[in-house]
Amino acid sequence: MAKVVHLGFLGCGNIGGGVWKLLDAMHDEILQRDGLDIRVERALVKSIPEARTDVPAEILTESAADVLEDPAVEIVCEFMGGEQPAASFMERALRAGKTVVTANKMALALHWHELQAAADQTGAGLYYEASVGGVIPIIRSLTVSLEADRIHRIMGIVNGTTNYILTRMAREGASYADVLADAQRLGLAEPNPAADVEGFDAAYKLSILSSIAFHSRVTVDRIYREGITGVTPEDIAFGREMGYTLKLLAIGKRSGNTVEVRVHPTFLPDSHPLARVDGSLNAIFLHGDFCKDMMLQGRGAGDMPTASAICGDILFAARAVRHTVPSFRNTAETDPALTVTDDWSTRYFIRMKVTDAPGVLARIADVFGQRDISLAAVMQKGSEGEKARLVLITHKARERAVREAIAALDPAIAQVVSCIRVENGEA
Ligand code: HSE
Image (tube, rainbow, N blue to C red):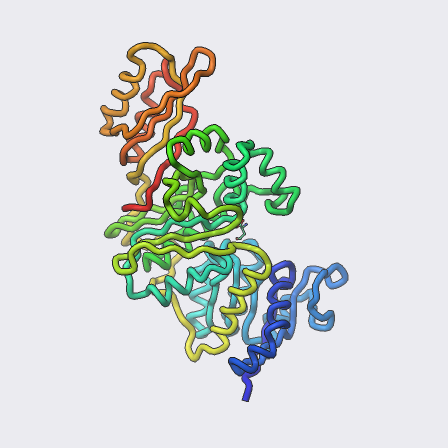
């Protein structure tokens, strides 16, 4: 006997339409293979007359209550995006005992504790595989497959828009503004690109990933965030000459009870697997005590890849005898047992304009040396008027010491143009 599973959709745009298409195409196969007869009962849209969807008109509604209060609906699939009303609708669904499947990283990262509490109260399931990395099965890998491991480091390219922009800037030597404008014309960047280019999207995803990987809640407000708006083709070109590729990385590291969580443009050695993840692809590289280094790569966005991950959650939820819960106390604040440090240690690429005169390099090196910052490479190349272009790569140094050194440089001889962190994937 087939098990009938009734779904309700909140939102029916690109992603909802993709899920409908996939369920329609796979319905008979899923029924035959898994014994699950998946049916969409109701779908919430903003305006029925303006709805552009393949979902049959008779199941469309403009009232959220028609989905949230329909006793037949067991699984609510949220495709609205944004923080509200998506989060409160999901909470209502969970409080009514309905399982929720969502790809909404913002609502999840900001309201996870409330959603989890509602799910715990009724025993409903909360599934969010598509919230990070699109179709890449990173959530289930961390929560199920790698649960017995101890993950120390995650480095992710988790935003396709910025990866696309940086890839084109590197290939074409083009400016950030020109590539962004082109990406917007092609529909690959939003008309208001702030969520992507300022790193907010990546920070929500990092909050979810690091909470799961480190078995402790890490909230978005504790994540250091720097976007790609200040990246120049000159930085990318200088980096390339020194064997580095620039990516916007979401980095989470745990050592004992200290964690560092940061999103910023990062140089990686060209040989690092993440350096070869180009265009709008996403990838997550992680390191655990027992799994050692591993990387998952795939499409981080797009209607059908995202629909694939969402439908995987729907089938998982439909079969579950008891729903899975996170391996940590899902609280409103970052786990008080953790210390979130902003004084991490990494390597730095520092580009400056300096006076081209005897003794200048020694004076600059001294400012760094006094703060225990050791230089690994120095490149002087070309000039701008009276000034020489100088790039330093440091050995591992403390963030605060590097900031102090930059502030202590004599502006009469050196002006820092950019400072970009360098990672090699090690501790
Ligand atoms: N705006 C996101 C990206 C979509 O560019 O990757 C998926 O969250």
